[in-house]
Image (cartoon, rainbow, N blue to C red; front, side, top):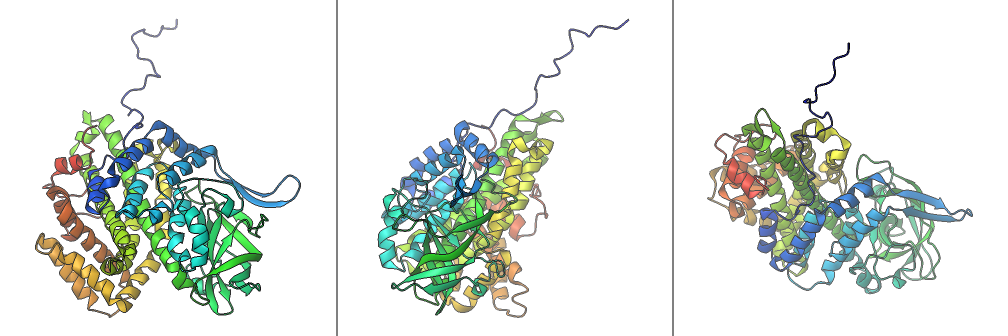
Length: 553
């Protein structure tokens, strides 16, 4: 005889002890972000950043982010009749994300805004809108960054800058001057050289008209090929030079821009990265012949700061997800957020996130003041951006892995969203120069730009006497800088120390004592381990978690 099931048994499909959906949440609910905006001259932008933060954390925007990555861009090389078109199709969710990003000033709008702090405001928006997905940040970053380089050819800037600074997202390949807004990309690297762009083999031959050339060659990694304009490097008769390449020519015909394939990338799947081929492609020179690297370096400096901001935003998003899980999940008789060791992990991540955010906004402030003529800030920006690019982007992968682990097995499942963040995490360390490239760039600045070294020294001096561990690190840094023996071999150690000293200085001056003390104790004073979650037992975890807005919600 079969015994019947007891009616008192629980329903096997009842879901318990699982967190609710995180959305809606406010991506701008971050004291480090809001205080940094005010400190760096963009207090007027706080209401807009708050509004954008609420939109970023909305179910709708989070769904756009998921769909844009699920429905990846598709390359169409030919139309149904066999005509070469080289177009990339995107899901509507990608377009929704782009519309918001451009409308909110995430592309080139800051260059048309005379208000002090306009560039800081842009980065504040990027830090919160980055809680959606990172792929669409590539074309907006390049559009922002192209403008200082383009200004070196004033007649071209006069035509295109008003459209590059537009807040209208106007997709589709058409004559650029007939559109309401433009996007710009960049093509530097080639198969044989990568970051060593001086080995480029793409050729540029004068085409008769002054400043007009024809290009022939193959670029290896050109993101966002659906953009309207591209700055590319090619070998002209006078040496490596910079050129403006439109996808559609003034007469309405398609410029030769043959997309050979889209890259099958680890992450950043929503963003199309391509290999375009030039064959008689018309291009207009930007800057003098033979000065291509110097011309495009302003663009690179801008995109490097976007890499710093992108990693800082990714880290904050991962932390918010981890804390949300910990607040709603219980184990061993208590909520995870109340377990001492989990609090240590989340507190350590919160300290790291605030350090990244503070440095991002300090760099944004330097950029804003530099474009307004502050030579000291320009010198500081030159060195500190390379330092920040090296360090913050390096911290993101380990940070994201630890945040994923806070969710346990749930975090390893695709629909948690954490795997997408984890795949994205290494990207910013690779793009716009890998870690070695940026470390060597710091060495070049140290050797050739004494004003930049002095600017960094002056910045660190602002916190002198506030923390003995920070003072000792700055002293050690001075000793390291005075020793040239094996300097290239030591470059990463040196840049890491510079970054930690700079972050420590910012936190000592601007963060609550609990955050600054935990940072200096572990990152500078040796009172911590190699993994996150190794803050000393004396750390004020309640204050740290409260500062980060993670304790209760």
